[in-house]
Image 1 (cartoon, rainbow, N blue to C red):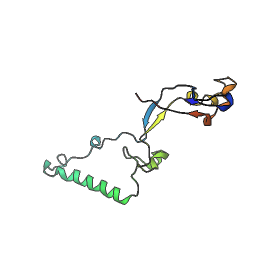
Image 2 (cartoon, rainbow, N blue to C red; image 1 turned 30 degrees about the vertical axis):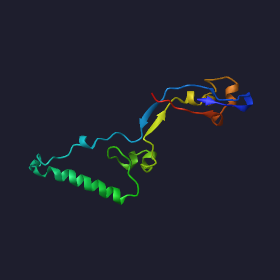
Image 3 (cartoon, rainbow, N blue to C red; image 1 turned 45 degrees about the vertical axis):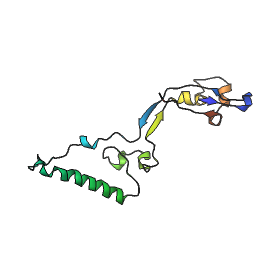
Image 4 (cartoon, rainbow, N blue to C red; image 1 turned 60 degrees about the vertical axis):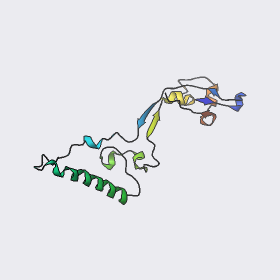
Length: 135
């Protein structure tokens, strides 16, 4: 986090704080191959017709795509009540991950009891710029 406050006579951004962050998936990981389905061999058939199952799944996904204006949220099938608000956003506009970090480091002026310095109470979001370095 860098900040620049003209009232302090600053001409360029200075480091206010540094934090470690981690990324969280918005859509839970979903491997369709891991979903248990009844194979044609266990249903009394043979592997001769196993290609029909995969073809039917492909056609169903194409029909779903054609019938909806936006792609539904990814991940395993869930009830609507279990979806987060961001999962209703179309996939084209939905971020792949969230960047999560500690609030007391990213916005120390909000933690007055933790950081009692007087000058920090004059700093707010409009004085700060954020950057992310990925290793």
